[in-house]
Length: 254
Image 1 (cartoon, rainbow, N blue to C red):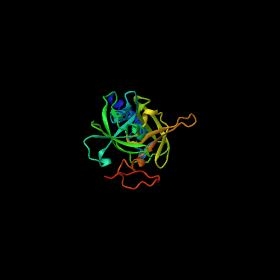
Image 2: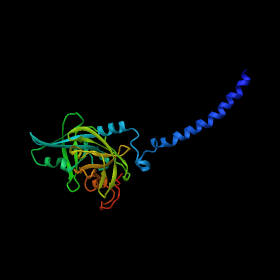
Image 3: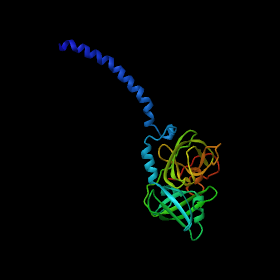
Image 4: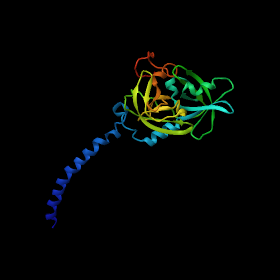
């Protein structure tokens, strides 16, 4: 009885083995983006682990409160940047935001504070700003893991994420894509509001590709803008090359 079954079993193995191999090849090809998902290879696909990407960016993102008086103030968003990139020695955390977010707090008597999601407000110090490019650098006595900066150019169609205090709603997240770039700006489709100003525009590796700066309040033009990392080279990041207004991607000093 065993002898008569063996040829049948061998026949099944011969038939099913090619089928299994074919199925493996069919499923392997579309799953490759889970391994090669860097913008360097495929920036058009969403982040491999969106939940982790959101959590990582949220942990490095703060709401900025600019209080000119007890009954008048404004808010925006900021994110932690690596001190080594800035080549600044500090025991505190350094934050990037927009100049227009903190502009009214440059005046004496105003209070500049930041807070994590649902966290306690802490005093922040303005270190430097670039009014022309609407950028500013803050310092705060908090421990935050800084976000990494992307080294890849952002091509039209690339997936991006924004996170910040949209219209005062802290921790707001939206997804979209790059529609185009200029020498100092990245244009994108994510839904944003006033409180998003200063937040990081994130690629599918969870790295920063720009600083969210402005939105178009026009039904006919549905896109928004972020300052590119090139623009940060003017006064915020100490870059290797002189920024000359050309469409080149930044490269900070090691």
